[in-house]
Amino acid sequence: MAAWWNELSAMTRGAIITGSIISYILMAVLYFLLWLGGVLAEAERTGGDTHEPMLTYTEAFLAVVCFILAPVAVWPLLLYSLYVIWKDARKITKA
Image 1 (cartoon, rainbow, N blue to C red):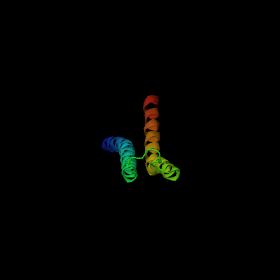
Image 2 (spheres, rainbow, N blue to C red):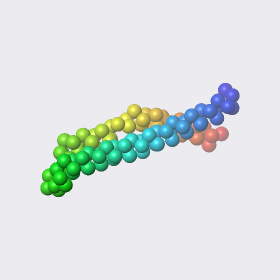
Image 3 (cartoon, one colour):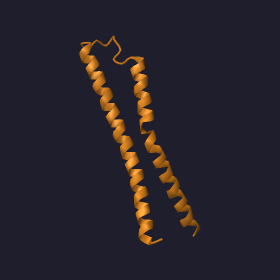
Image 4 (tube, helix red, strand yellow):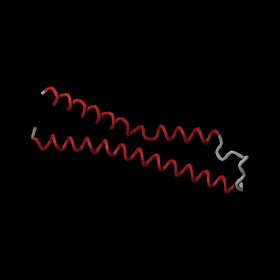
């Protein structure tokens, strides 16, 4: 294949990795802001009463599960990209 194809392929893999990491960070920020909004709304609803839990155990469990499982679609792309880069690096070091 042409040399430009190899360069394009490397740039594409880099873009996939960078995009995956950035999307995971943005998702974490989004979930934190959603959680914070829920906490503030609950505090306003209860009049700031700290004796009543702000989140039920079910809500806290679902928030953790969603935070862990939401980026599942991103991980296969990230892992495949790392595998391809590792494979290319092995070819280069053997040559």
